[in-house]
Amino acid sequence: MKRIILSLLLAVALAFSPVVGSLDLTSTALAKTAYHRTALTGNTAASLDGIDGAGLADGDFAFVMAGSVLYTYILDDDSGAAESSPSVISPDSNAGTKRWILQSPPPASTSAAGIVELATDAETSAGTDTERAVTPAGLASVYQYQTLYIPASAMTPATTNGAAAGTAETSSNKLNMDYLAFDTTTEEMAHFSVVMPKGWDRGTVKFVFRWTSATGSTAGDTVEWEVAGVAISNDDALDAALGTSQVISDTLLADNGADLQVTGATPALTIGGTPALGDTIHFVISRNVGGTDDMAEDAWLLGATLEYKLTETVTAD
Image 1 (cartoon, rainbow, N blue to C red):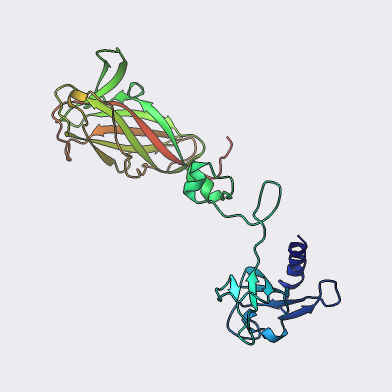
Image 2 (cartoon, one colour):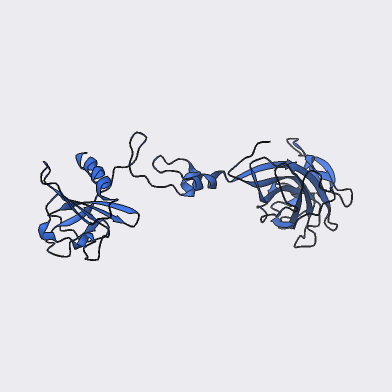
């Protein structure tokens, strides 16, 4: 502990001084010399390895301010270890077995200051590590995306080429679910609007679709879902142009729509207009029958998950 305290005191005294030199501590009970350098190697007057080993004694201190990094060393006069910068530095002259050994402060804990490693995004997301520190960027990687789920029952079939609303019941357990049926030849549509949460960054969004199919479908069939959106502000025209749409393909997993289908996320969707806090965001979902979609039966949309990014600031009304 005395070594650590002394190291800290000498670091304050020497590390931020522009002068390269040494501090004689022979008048103290420790009888040691502390050196200050600005480079680790190079065999110069400013480097740690440039200090002549003949004048070094066991327990001498050295502080090296290399750029913005502060290194603390203690001399071990019988180490003989192979040089490995920055951990072990050997004097270039009269080294013998003398080596500068890098000193590491104790690890940080909940009750004591010390060295701490920064957590990666994956470690931050796992939320189980008790030894690493979380950065603001790491925290943002975990909480960056939020979701809103919009069931088919909350969507409005388009007046022109609208998807057909229906309710299905499973055969054994009698689970009932609302759906919108999209035709295989005509590109049918459904609409919904949301006012996004204040934390939204007003940037791109993504969609994940939950769907199944009418009976008669075959596992391996492909369905493509398409979505586009536009932001409408106060006093904007309601007849606003949608932004560029995005499409996601999905492969049917079971015959006759027996299983729930969950697509991957669409590519990032740019919303038309200039999204602002409090805007009404209007979305249109359709079945992209002109693409690689090859399922002959109706595709039943059960709902869609809207994924959006958070911003760092939330403004009040």
